Picture (cartoon, rainbow, N blue to C red):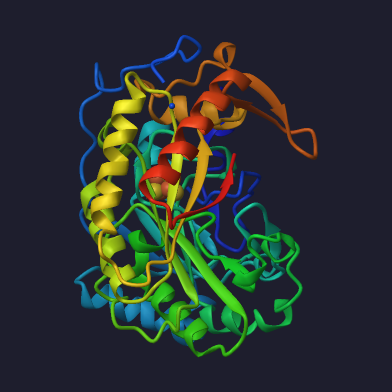
Length: 400
Ligand code: SF4
């Protein structure tokens, strides 16, 4: 695959949406049937998170016409960063001399833009929520399995949306019209659900945008049967503690066993910090959750995932009125995401060998590679039994 095919055109049209076609979720038995992999054998530890400081920030003329766009620019400039005012929606200078350089430049660029009109026509996002609402697209972290990889049509520039007021004001017509969680008996009580982290990581960007804080307040003030949902691999929740959330936002923390979080989730927060953040929000009355993903049968996985559950138990110990859910998602990849990820992370230890997987076809014929049925069954049996034994109040929302 050449440069052009892999990373798309050199310039980025900021008026266009990122092309997306990925599973909903933004983002393992020593038994005979599971082929295991030791992620710690060769890979160096991933670097832990610091607050993201983009090397380049740009804003489009249209974004500056929105009050929230101006707020983002002021926030970024107050942090001492320069903001380039673009003359049009076209961003140039992202293409480097190699794929790696283009990737690095794009990953360190943040663009303040107006969301494409198609993004305001909300779509169902099974199995997570009735509706997907995007406040940004792209993420500065470097997870070697990132589910966004096969979805980006160009260099992975992070785009944050300036038209937040319009996005939030546009949600009301979707109330009571949900077809995903609203139609499931065990989830209908959640009301109409809106997932706001499909193509980004909210807490990676919140210090630069303030967008999810505004969304939490909006839902807190929305006196209706609704729920805002988002998931994160970060831990910076200072701005969320004490907000008038009215219990209408469920924050989930994306967690995994230490060999995965420490070796293949570059730039994200330490597992212990994510769980401490979950505890802080739970103590502040937020409904909280665990996005356990992507589950992988790494070497000695029962021990490693058992340790993860030990940490979870400690994190939620003695939290009054705890409302805790789990979403269990096994590792999968598509031919496209595999190509992109192997280009970005050529020495990755994440197992993306199609010969060890089962092919699964989506509704429109799209192909993804999942673990074989016996491996899936082994993982599922273990997780469901251990979660029920250790955390009897936890509700598992789905397994995939
Ligand atoms: Fe991808 Fe990792 Fe960012 Fe999630 S946190 S969007 S998996 S890079």
